[in-house]
Amino acid sequence: MDKIKYSIVLLAGLLTLAGCNDSFLDQTPETDITEKNFFKTDADLQLYSNKFYDYFFKSTLSLGDGASDNAVCGNTTDRIYRLMSGGITPDNVGKWSWGDIRNVNFMIARAGNATGDNVKHYIGLARLTRAKLYYDKVLTYSDVPWYSRDLQTTDNDLLYKTQDSRSTVCDSILADLDYAIANMKTAAQMGGHSYVTKDLALAVKAHICLSEASWRKYHAELGLNDADRFYKEAISACEQLMGMGYSLSPSYETLFRNTSLADNPEAIFYKDYDRANSVLWCYNDLFGCNYGVSKDLFDTFLYLTDDGRAVPYTSIKGYNTKSFAEGFNNRDPRLKMQIVYPGYCRPQTPEIPYTQMLNTNQGYSVCKWEPMVNNGNTTGYGSGDCCYGDVAYYRYAEILLIYAEAKAELGQLTQADLDKSINLLRDRVGMPHAQLSDWLANIDPVLAQKYPNVTGSQRGAILEVRRERRVEFFQEGLRHDDLYRWALGKAFEDLGKGIYVGTKFPAEVDRNGDGVADAAIVENEAQKAAEQAKGLTAFVIGTDGFHVSSDGYLEPSDEKGKYTFDTKCYYTPVSSQDIVVNPNLVQNPLWK
Image (tube, rainbow, N blue to C red; front, side, top):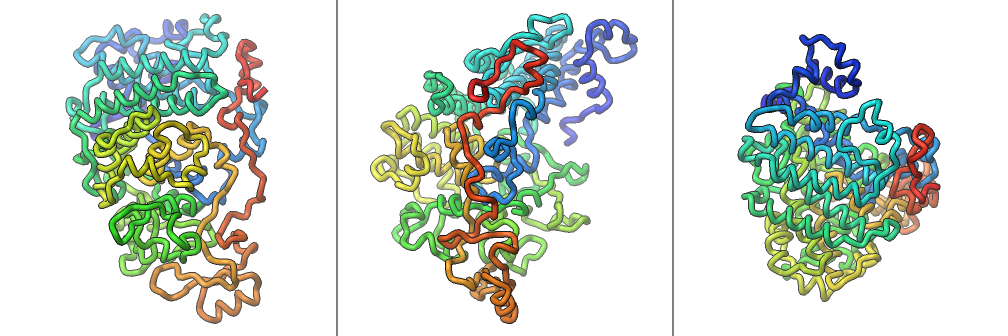
């Protein structure tokens, strides 16, 4: 963390300055940090822009996939469920905030006064930050006002303007991204991948352009028909990064369970967590305390046949009634690298297999981010554990998947494209190569049903690229946005099913893979007592925190049919309070 140092007092003063008006600035003594004696050198710009790094990091919880079809969601307090149940309305949504964008605009408007060799680099950093912040607003509201500079109290026309169109705002975002790419230094020039650099700008552009292309292709309510332009922009950004010397980490598993990513060839941008300086993050949020992995995701991982092929797991006879332990056999190796399997041992108890939880999350537990060694946390490993392994918020694997997806959506994916993207991901974990001809000729009916709005000459390829993306990026915070951009909001109505236990009770389960049942699902207290007498942990359906579906899967106890996804749920309404303050604002038509 010694690479990026913050002066908290100084930055606090600067951010306060960004919210002040000109008359106040005129009254500030010259000995203080003011607009008049700051922004003189590129060092000033560096110091001011250090705070922008926070916008590219994610919280621990946002790394998870809790509100998506990847999870059995027993915690429905997430925003999407409040939208679906009518808990969010224009009257209670809360006012929107422009403080972050104003702080960025404040620097951009004054950076031209600075001197030094790196002025354009830091202006590029600010414009990259503005692009990301603005696209987050586009994803939230769609149409929003575009402001290219910080506003003053005298800017009545701008303060009371209506929203600009999504097209106008996205074009401005592209201009910011292109400026950043043209003017920022590379990670090699800056000395590492913990810096915001040109490399990150290219990755952000690829990510944003793929997202916007999908929104324009799959969301008819937007009335935009230029998705191809954004797919092509995404491909161009990917190709530039693919020519900059990046490669995949030799080990998929240790990419997430590391002590440092400083020399990792896959990390485009990472946060340098540091135990010595108490820069830590909470792993326990991701282990599965509030939700578990869904059977729907579990079934997405391919099955490896005896003759060396990778086929859909759902094509295997009896796949849907295999026991907890049996389901892990002969699967894509990434399954066991991410999801707790029978016999898995946590690092603090290396000789004791972990016992799968049943009553708290219904689904499979996650091991993807768990440290490979006991971190010696004095607060107790397993109770709000703190980790110091680095986190790659942008990694090269996503670039390869963006490239393949955009190519397939345009109907231009070739076998050569697959070999330099998807098949590199498969090589890393020892999976058979994907064959485009097979993808196009043998469309998986389960994927086709899951993604019913996919069409085109390369439909099968689009579906299989989505499988690869879901498997590769599980528990990295992308699935929710993927479902949104592909117009698959209906998936949120189903809270998911978890581990299969059967339909005959008592149902005994071997949770740790030793071949001996250690838990039982029962229907009443009498059965519970009988199973406990045999030494098993017993859970009563309906009273111990979970239900069992009619086809034998653990499931949440939430009321069925409570959540209904409407097209308006893709967007957050503009607050009625904001419209009162500025009558020129227009409510999203879907929320009127």
